[in-house]
Image 1 (spheres, one colour):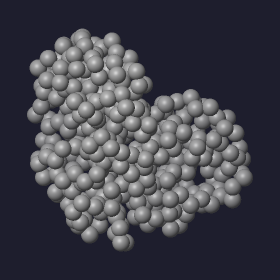
Image 2 (cartoon, rainbow, N blue to C red):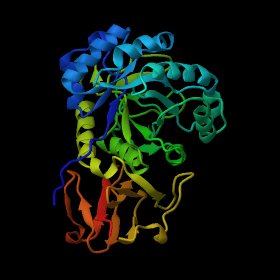
Image 3 (cartoon, rainbow, N blue to C red):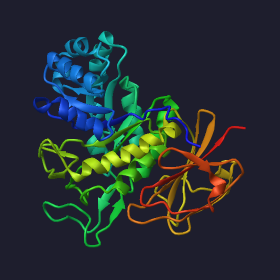
Image 4 (spheres, rainbow, N blue to C red):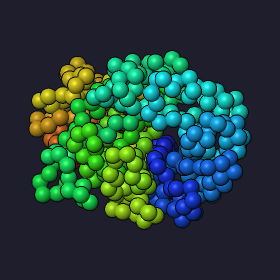
Length: 403
């Protein structure tokens, strides 16, 4: 059975095309890579109006980013942008410190007074090793609670890039994992997803989350390698398993060097597509094909399997499984196991947690369960032998209608 695609998963590319480089052709490249949204720098209200008109023509939406100019002229930008069908968000602040809460809140209030229909976007840090230094709080949970108590933020967005390269620094100019090099996951990754997902559900707000698509050095610890499709899927399927309603990539266009960061490669470098462009495109096509599973879903529970499970997560027990799942094993690795409810269906989503290796998934299912393939089509799960081999970051999805 092949179901019609009813939902569209919002996918936002960060660090979009430099304002002076924007053309219709480059916006079409954004769309071709599977992005529905792009962060777009604008210099003036008139510049925002022009970029939005071009985005509307191409069929993408913009998160307009005016930097400090928005804080000095929120009414001007809101009046210029509010009537455009291509406007998604006003980008207000990335990774704020709690000391800036009142300034951010005032900017949001002024924008919203002119345009109550479009959200103001604020993106938070995830859990960090030096949490107080970066955020002014001791924990990620405290950081969110303090900001949301003072700032009317309409989404819970965070960034944390979990896929790191073993063996320290990679050679200059080429951050690919070659010659047996492997990746590992930040210990803060699933802790952040646990805390953020629970907070978003408590507040009744949508969660937005990232994958890293730009390789660069990490001046604190191990480097961020060139992403494989498996790395990207591991991040995005984990985000979706925890209930994310908008996916983001850092970045689309290669940023300019700044501070201690040495950027290596992104999907777009100086207006030309790199191999990462089509890796992102491939992953986005798969995610979009399965959008009906995730858009508007309710998280009923998320657990982990494996010899060891990530900090702050919960180990899967037999009694946690949905009633249509008789047993589930991952004998040679670890997985994220999520039970989602959406549109009259229950879904079991199993994500291979390894960035390097295939996983053996053994699952015994009740009658009437359907297998959701990568192209979004459904087949009877009874036609399969109950063993699956998801690659790094892959997700196996099973579904049954409510009875």
